Amino acid sequence: MESCQFTVILKRKEVVAAVLPLQEHWLPLSNLDLLLPPLDVGVFFYWVPTTRSNFTFESMVGTLKKSLAEALVSYYAFAGEVVTNSVGEPEILCNNRGVDFIEAYADVDLHDIQLYNPDATVEGKFVPKKKGGLHGISQAKSISVLPCFRRSLLNPRRPGFYDATIDNMYVPVTMMPPPEDPEATGSDHLMSRIYYVKAQDVEWLQSQATSDGHKRSKLESFSAFLWKIIATSAGDNVKRCQMGIVVNGRARLSNTVNEGDNRSISSDSSMATYFGNVLSIPLGEASIEDLKTKPLRWVADLVHQILEGATTKEHFLGLIDWVEAHRPEPAVTRIYCNKREDGPAFVMSSGLQFPISRVDFGWGRPAFGSYHFPWGGVTGYVMPMPSAIGNGDWVVYMLLLKQQLKLVESNASNVFNPLTSDYLQL
Image (cartoon, rainbow, N blue to C red):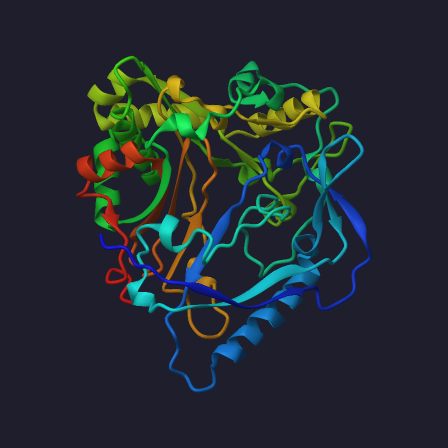
């Protein structure tokens, strides 16, 4: 594909704070928040310019700033700062410092932007780099409901207990291997690409992954399909390939809440609106030979088995207790620490519940939206989202090694289509 060169000119930068005053206070992070590495998570949207006369660029900017200032009254943590407490752990200082609001101009038509290659057209242009922000503190949730900041919802148990399998999923940072020398990786480094997958292809993968009447989910089927492709990138001396899958624990923890003395109370609504991360990343490993030769349904069954152990309330309660047992030493998911000699590895997340059609500020819903998550290392990251077209297609953000992306495009070009402005009807 031809590259599109353009310049982004900064027009104005200001700070937008909550429209109402806020009493300064500290908001500690939960044990599950502490498992997230300090990474930048970008989300970006494109809107087709409106022809309605009552909307100018200036009025749209004004609407965004006004809406942001109002939203920060309830979501005040986003207007705070991440600071370090006396034991070296991050906390949120809720001081209404505000949120950076940047106005910029790009000398390019939306139709001419190469959406398929966000490294060239998004990184540092539409998604500026941010240090010290609240990037990973909260999962993407609707702002149409008031958030719950009750950290007691995720208190550890007394006494704590966790299954030994969690030791295979997470690791204290002191046990992490040193980072690789970027010059030693050669040309095979992580790169970002965005594809779209047609609804009928997602359904076809699901049908191929179903066996003996056991219907696998679309995400399980898609994960198995990609796992088979990634396995083919392994060198001759590599025998294993790993995959992690992000699991949302809100529904698993919504029935009971620990109050510190093992009593339980109902908390369905509180857990649904809880401000913070309630995630786990179970890790699966299989031989390269099996992933290459076994049918898709076999790999999908393996994916299902990986998820089974992590989609329970006890798993998340145990994970909370595991973090408590290791504090104040920080920890991170083990797959994030993967080394090149360990074999191929990637994390499958899911933004399929992201309400992209509801991101409407008065001038219509976005024509396109995606994550941008260049997290470094050699472990890949994949995030499918619903297409803004609303026809059941998926938009898939991929951060994979260069050689792995080549295999995706050569071995599965009938499934993964490079995202274009023509597809989005821009």
